[in-house]
Length: 393
Image (cartoon, rainbow, N blue to C red):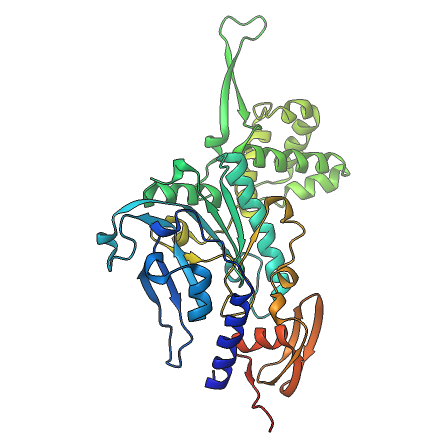
């Protein structure tokens, strides 16, 4: 990046911060702060181990320093400005989740558009929130668009603050479905059969919550679809599962047809073939409903995470807090475009053009010197795809 471009971006970041009131996280003075300045040297220079007492009011600091990126810690400390983690005196940490579109299943960077990647990431966010709210019953959640490739979720419930890294990893494994076994989703109940001296046990696939609910819903939905098919088509669909031949498929279909009500209740002991079929849905459910979070972010009690309200130095988009009820309507390529960069055009030399979807419009940008809406120009410059054109005299 040329110095002219860097100076322009720093100036416009400052203009934005002059117009923006930053709301710091809870217990802001107990957290470590860090930032990445606009530097001409190759590589990334991180300034960290700073306390808010050193930096000052966040809004004033951002206006003064105009950093490329700014972060605060998930952890809270006795001395957040100490130069080493051992000296800080850890008090506890928020539980932080990071969803990065570049690392999601079904996303192909370089082929999928930025908008498509972010849409896929929002679907993953919905699944993550389902785990956090329904399975763990967390209440103090803050959802944030990162300003770049995805979303962050901060959990600040008191009961997560003291969790060590290994316990946070257990939560990671749960939402990712790592190591999930069919037997973990089965509960047994004693049934006193008519005319029997000895009661028997019935095995039920848990249907009320957790991975059992998810697996049960997918399994029953598949069975219902199956029962609406012609018999030959239904048997053919069952044979798509590994290890299921025509005879076993016919037995599964017949058992499902005769025991639909029991399956709705989660009873997978109606027939051995049905139990075998239900077991196949664990892996399928995990594949399609897990939350593909970035594990190191959640397990690291000292993690630095991007400050909501700040600008992302790789996109010039704002890091935005999102109200829970507004997630579906939130459009990051519209709602995260700062008002500061609306209303006029900027002359730039584009080195890597293409189709840009931003601000509610789609721009087909060619290479070379041209004037573009500033928010598009800022996006391209921060991503290294354009340089600020020299001012004409």
